Length: 546
Image: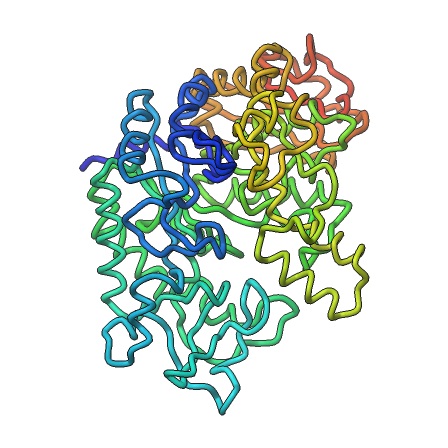
């Protein structure tokens, strides 16, 4: 089938189904709730929806531990509800992509249950090994969720590998049967009308060896599984056997990916990758520690990825990251800062990914989460580790909240009614943020100067201007506070100028002497010609003139 590559011109909106819209009043979002909001997404200008996992799951990691790849989580609805979502979205010219989680399954998946019989063919679907000696794992690898990456099974006298929770055993991609199973899953969904997949931790599915890893303060063993040659071979096979035969898109979550591997992933393997460099701009080596001076790193990573990779997946937040406003904007300038980030998101070269609520300026929870309020399984491990290391309760909670994914998973704020219009039940699975009466879809839809209204104007401008979609990218060297670049297409020049800081910044003469017409700004009535300075978080999109 001919590939249309609509994702090149498209705008992706990520939905975390558990927190988007609750249709039945149980405090948990669901698929009928998503269907009810399709007109809103159409009005925003979205062309592709990415759904975080909607498959059956024991919820050890809220959907990223899958117990059945070809059905729907009963909390979210039925397979018929999913078919209706695909059809109703299609009527609005919106495509759906799903999460593909095939580094691991749930330990409650039928494959894994059967794997505990050594004589079962499913035993080789997972990575089982004998320990080095009694009571000692096969190697020193550590899990993303803390502790050893191995779990002992007494009945087998063997250990199984889990790079995440012990409830998420890793699949054995050395077994060709695993590839066959995954290809069948892909076809099942693509034949139902799915447009493609966001591929979870896809650059670490192939374990080249099980040798001990070099000691690191965070994760030990990565050199044996991140971006190995076998990983590329598997993705090429999936592309050749499945993806190339459908009109679809794929985007890979590729932790710690470098430029060379990113280019390889984009050459007959995947359509886009998520890089993590930009999201690490405000983090130190250990991500519980925050870096105050982040702007230079932030800008540098964006510019370098634009230079090194032909087409990027551009994002500033998702279900695994804290809210971008809370990370990169002084709360005194929340609206201006949100619009500034939107300007970058929708004018950089690549496909923009908007995370639910980003378009209305949703922020982190109004205070640090208390331990009893945690949902993210990583929080419990990290808090316990910090306490064991001698940190007090307050400091431990502060460090946990520096990377707490629960912040991004708060219920979507639809209105100023109870539970923010997310649910008729005020006992929502995570609490609604206190600011929902000021930042919600209903109130912002009625305000022409709101963050949401700015997003709509910005998306409409992008769609109407080929230079902002397919145009080349050329950055101007400036101070760390200023981000300036050209988008050029067939002689049309668009100039994007952004102040990343909360203070007034004087512009260099090379910019202040430019002339042009402002197409969009986050300051009302902003001019550009002979502009001497930028106000806090000011952003402009300019059509240059001679």
